[in-house]
Length: 313
Image (cartoon, rainbow, N blue to C red; front, side):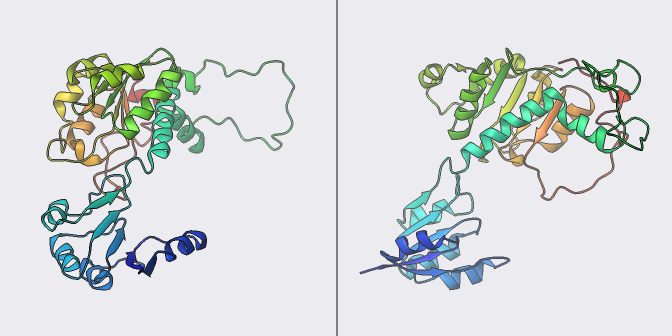
C-alpha cells in the first residue's frame, strides 16, 4: 500500500514519477501561506516534507494525531521545526546536512579573495567613475604599447586603496568545523594557507588529520589573518561573537560570515569596522533581510576614498 506523502518542494517530472511509485503525493505551494493553513492542507499525511515553512508544536501535534509518522525538513539545519514536539510524539526527523555546503564553501572562499584583492572597492570605484579618465569619442583608437600600467598618481587605485593581498601563506581561522567549515579548510590548504579551527564538538584528531590546527577561540582570533564563521544558531552561539571577539583580532584581519547573522552582535561588528579594529568584513547573512537603507557616519565614497583609511594587508 502506498504511503500518503505531503510535500512543499516542487519535483521534476522524473523525480515525481519515482516517488509516485511508492507514495500518493499531495503537493502544495506555500507562498505566503500561514502556519494554520499549512497545517490543515498537509494534515492526514503519513510523511511530510517541508522546506522553509514553520511547523510548531500545535501543527505537529495535529499532524501526529492524524497519522504523521515521519517528518523531513529539506534544510541543512531544520530550524523551522519544533524538534522537542516531534521528540515528545516519537516522530523521527530527517534533514539534509551539507545540502548546500559546496555552494557556501565556494562563496566563502570567493569573499576571501574579493576582500584581499579589493575587488568590490575597485568595482564600485569604476562604476561611480572614480577611476575613469576623460571621455573619449572612440575608445578603440589607442596607441599600441608593449606594456600598459596605471601610473602611481592621484586617482590611481594603487594610491587610494593600496595593493591587494594574497591567500597564499596566510592563516585562516575557521569557527565551526562542520560540513561547510571542513570543506573551507580543504580549499584553504590548497592555497597553502595555515588553517586554525575551533569546534568543541569536533574530534581534534580528525582536525589534525585534515591538516588543521585545533585551537582555542583566543588563539584563533589572535593569530588569524581571516576569520570565517560557520556556526548554527543555538542558545550557546546566539550573539556569542561580540566586542570581546573583535578586540582579540588583528587590526589587519578580515571577518567573514556566511552562516547566520544571529551569532554576531550587530553593534559589535559595526563598531569594530568603524573603529578599525579589523580591516574589513564580508557578509552573506544579515539580521534583517533584505538589509534596510540607513544613514552612515562615513562618506558615500567610503569604499575607495583614501580619506577612509588604508590597511596594508
